[in-house]
Image 1 (cartoon, helix red, strand yellow):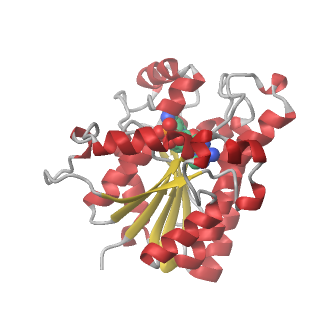
Image 2: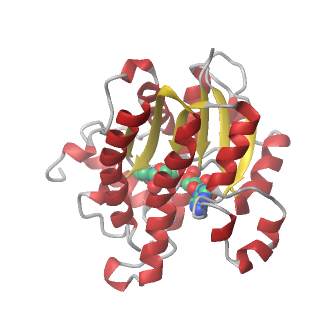
Image 3: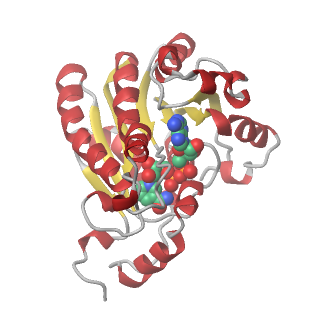
Length: 286
Ligand code: NAI
């Protein structure tokens, strides 16, 4: 039987989530995605209207199939957590069952089990503010959407993950080195995500034989990255200073995720894997 993957954080064809979906599909996996509720309508209608068809082409010439798109808001674990104003919001009231627990239940009802869980989402409302100017709410919101969201997804999906399965998240070097401009507590959120990768690797490994790894990716001009405002500078910096002086493609991150999710990586867990043209290894810019 082919493997089944649930990829949280796909809302267009520009980000890492889409590229990971493609690499997993090319390797034969069935693809389910979780799309942020406010982005759901435009993503689904663009898919239907063929706007992504060119990006759907796999190496063998066929088109990637997304078996099902689930609305998801990973900052809410169950309906009791959802504030009234969000419930009443038109973009949210148009969909249902989009809290983490409900999505896991729906996937269980629809498909029974999955093998691969991918977390490719982050949000920090104050990302453009320096940490010294970040509010408590902004900081906690970054951690909730970017770090706890992974704990929650794994917690709710692990009961339906087949033993031997794997989970993967996306992190950024700002967790361990100073990257001015990656503010709002987003650097803190990535540090939490990486630390949790270790603890969750232990707990999920011992209890469920599930592997937990994270990919520390180099800069990509995704929708989320453009919102931060310094992505072009980061791409130029990498081109100038990394050991490999080439633009990083989302496909290279996708292929690493497919490797980490596969039996080829059966002894790799609790790892931060750098896919950044080697930039992390530099001590000075030259
Ligand atoms: P993206 O915009 O393609 O992906 C972020 C996704 O998160 C979007 O689809 C957005 O709708 C979704 N999202 C935001 N809040 C959500 C919530 N509460 N519930 C569910 N979904 C939510 O951008 P990108 O850059 O591909 O981001 C994917 C991951 O890669 C993130 O974890 C990001 O931090 C990480 N990353 C990105 C880098 C870059 O340069 N683009 C570098 C290193 C890591």
